[in-house]
Image (cartoon, rainbow, N blue to C red; front, top):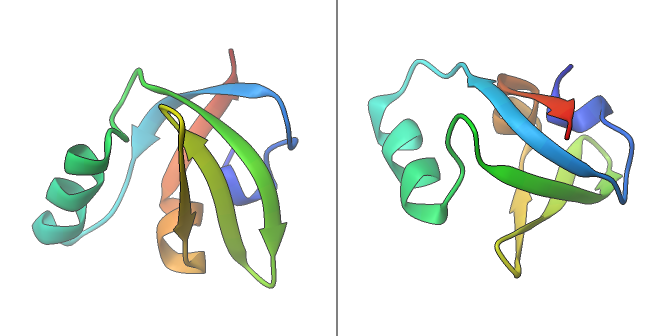
Length: 73
């Protein structure tokens, strides 16, 4: 399921990242978001997702958050 629609406050595992821009993929990798990594959706607001990634809060816009496919860990 897309990160944007995942249940909040549960540990999630990134299954797949689909984005056409290599720069965005590289930036997500630098932030610690990659296939197999664990993240937690804190809340989704107006199409944006606020997440906890390795102890840091990150916000992703709609385009990025629907391109991150997750499963409940």
